[in-house]
Image (cartoon, rainbow, N blue to C red; front, side, top):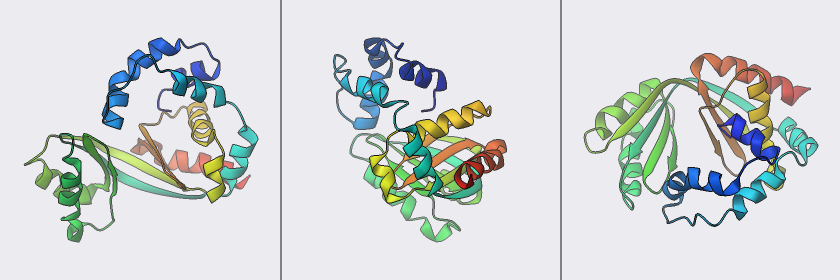
Length: 204
């Protein structure tokens, strides 16, 4: 979803699935925490086949969503070894009394991603950098969409938003898709514009 040209190539079915599988192999292994099989491209093909389908349903579901914007967000990735990420989460939560806004935490097999208000990010960076390697991306904005329960059965919502924003000259830094929540991370300067674009899409 972050790579619009790749997304469009998949939608147009002009991608070599095996070449793409080889390109994303290491990222898949990082996300899943297990060895990936290069010969297995079924998931990529299935994703490609679904792109561009049921667009009208995706638009309808989007209209039922609730939108919020949080500016001045710091994106922190805390690196750890396999099996250590629960300890990282616990270490972040120990700082909860110092937070003005509860940060968003996403636990992966070898890292924990934290999206926090820039003021709340300071104790996280200061405390956890003592024990873990961290990567920090500052001056971002987080747009949150609370989707209706029916969104679970409708494919193409994230793809629809990605394409909509790209047409307006905005590239996503990251996308997190939960059961009824869709979080979009963009450069801070784009936050109000993304909110405006999506608000218009929701209300019209």
